[in-house]
Image (tube, helix red, strand yellow):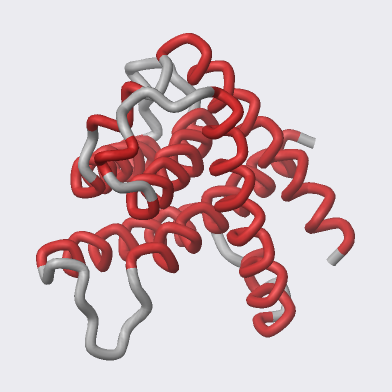
Length: 181
């Protein structure tokens, strides 16, 4: 588990660095997006990964790793949007954005630790393509929950699904990094 935590934190640091740099460049323009729009953006990213996996072609030239980073960061944006009411405003100071990012990512990391313990690091034996499919499945679930006005009868809510997407994306990034070595 120590190896996983080290690798997880390294990949997460890449995501956070990009998120904060883009926040400096663009501010919090993403605050205008409704959670459903963020879900659709996540879906587009995951479908692009799957398309590249299936065809072996990458005509845009942006890396698959970059798409997994986007999955992490858009998921965190979605969790923040679920938490912050619109009346909070569109422009958030960098310090507040960083604190919210860290809060959601720390909760997500704690969830990963608990699940990784119970599942015995099963993700290490999975194919990256299966991880991509699980992310797409989570996104279809999120879309259904959103279509049900956020209500579930027995299932986990939106935030739990976004957390799973973050964790699967980070696992894929770890596996991609291991393939490079």
